[in-house]
Image 1 (tube, rainbow, N blue to C red):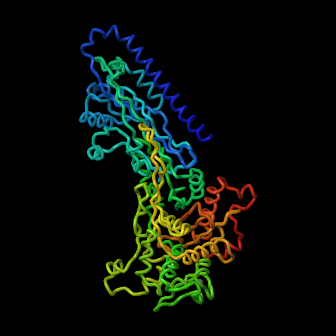
Image 2 (tube, rainbow, N blue to C red):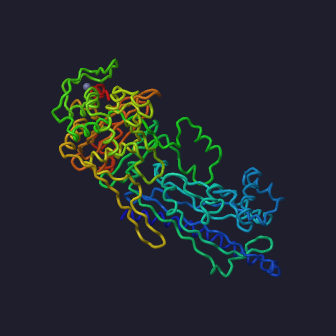
Image 3 (cartoon, rainbow, N blue to C red):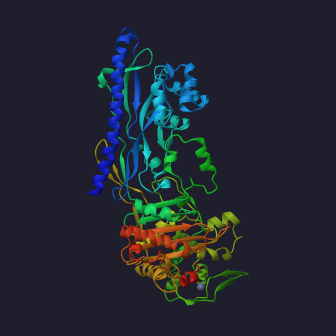
Length: 607
Ligand SMILES: [Zn+2]
């Protein structure tokens, strides 16, 4: 009920404003007709009909609970009809619009090439003062009008900038490629969902035939508007997104570099996709001032770069489960196979480190405590071809196919890769040891790791990640459900059970490295990772899912250059899981600390 109410009342506000706009226009038209009909009546032979495109409302976007996340608000553009424009007015126009003469002229020239009778957008989203000036000087400024056009507006606390994407004015080369629908000055989706679903969101343009007099002033609608074509609103998107989880994850990463990706393991729907630092998408809604572009493009923190889908970092220990699954499934080891960890492993003349002396360790304990020595040895025992084969099954080294277009394949090393890179016979088993703990040349994105966490939660049901759940077609009123795409990774039950038990223990049993991801009243399972990198401190990782018994959310958290995953990434995952499953942060109510971990526990975490 509440959601419905919000939906309708928001829409009503929009239409009320739209209504006021039409009344203003209508009054002006009548005014013009009365004032000028006598004066210009005789000149009617010189009247002309002008074809003016009417921008449709771009489709709205709603989150999984019906909350409006991408809205439209009214805005005004100042336009010039090239054939009517007089150069003597250039000075006054540039003064009113606060623009450079060259820019105004360039826009008019471009428009002229297309159609000199059709109004060209000179400035978008002008303020009220500018509008009043245009109105005040309307007697003098021949061929200059203002025009209503909806603008994107984001009503929630979340930015969602890398997920929702942004829109921009169409470029010359796009115009040539995309053909009939678009005209110079039109808006087009440039990234994220805005780009991926452009053909649904854009709607259909309307056209008004307007009669103008010899002075270029509007006399009225041709044929009483009967020949006009009404615009059709763009289709709405119902997303799998939970905007509250998105907003929380954004705030938890607010002063950091990193990413959070949360997926619904029952269908692959994206619950949250955060990349930080980000930007306010409203800044890029239409024509972006050069200074804003320059600032976003030269910022060393790269706010435009989507860390959730485009990074390819080593995943560290979060990759250990993959090796465990491969070795167990292939019968290379069983659950009773043990390694005696003495805190390091020597292979050839190289010493590979561990964080603790773990003693006698089996596969479940090795996941729980994140024992490196166990996995160094297991990697050598399993071998590269098997490891690569399972890596491929879990989607590494390839795009996931998510519906926001921008993503990286990452890098899953194989024998061919090493042969190509170093030459056949020029690389040794020593190259493989660190792959066992998710280091070396392996590169993954947070999205790929979240999808892998989903498959672990699901015992092999690997859904293609997607953000759009339903498309509500405006013209046909049909609702198109986006059917989940799933493939099954077939492993023996006892193999899944062993690995999932390791993940449960990592969070819930003493000595586990993921204790900071605990959530009151819910069993969380997961794995920490701490990835070395050449650019400063280690990257912190955590992947997990909850509830353990019946998973409803799988998650991956990356925080760059901070240290241990168990200290910096796991608490963020816990809070996001809590927000999703309870709809709020319940530990505040229960008077529990923000991070459910004692200082001593935290000090013992070394992964
Ligand atoms: Zn160990």
